[in-house]
Length: 78
Image (tube, rainbow, N blue to C red; front, top):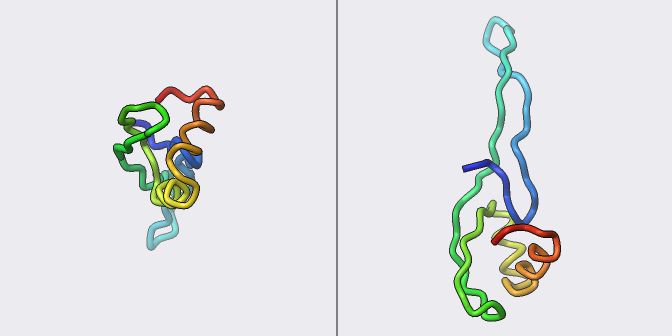
């Protein structure tokens, strides 16, 4: 599963791990992406989205119909 939120577009961030001796090695921070099922009345079916907690909050505030309409307009596969 790719570490990308379908609603917010959050992707991994990259940086360095720094040890006690101050050696630097590359690492990445993945967003907290969860697979979540939503019932979409406008489509008449259930959809599975990969969303971060921030994306879940956006869905709670704006409603699943508005978010799915925006995703479809963007060309996102649902």
